[in-house]
Amino acid sequence: MRTFNTNEMTQQFDNLFMAPARAYMSLSIDYSEKLLNAQLDANKAYVDTGIAQMRQLMSVKDADGLRSYMEGQQKVAKELAERVKGDADKVVSLQQDFMQKSQKLTEENVKQAQAAASKMSKTA
Image (cartoon, rainbow, N blue to C red; front, side):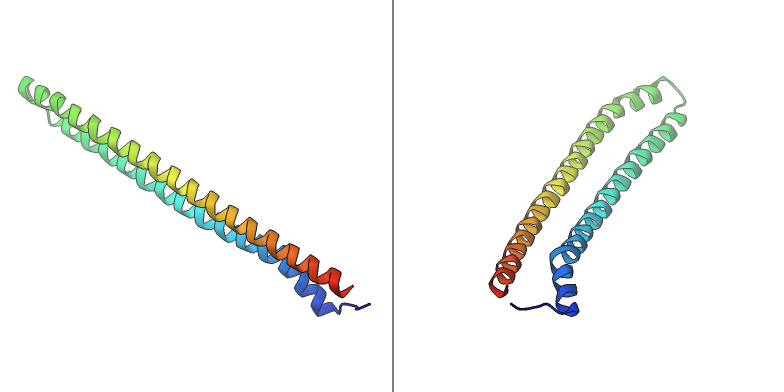
């Protein structure tokens, strides 16, 4: 029967537990960063649009200016709806990418654990 030394046990522990945990944490951090940046970009665009609309409204001086402003609101609403859809699509894409990568990572870790278990049972 073969005995494991401390270095081998440490390496096995790292391979089976810590390395997968680090890989998943790295994936999670990358996903969180991308999601946060997407949200910040979207929020900035929405705030900028709102401020621009308030400034435009403040410049209205007469009935013609108000009519022109109101007509422009349809365009702004359409652009904003397109932006919201694009932002939602981006978040869905990020989530799908994260799920695919985390599933692949899990599958790889299961294979490694099975291989390690098989190796340990053969040496025992």
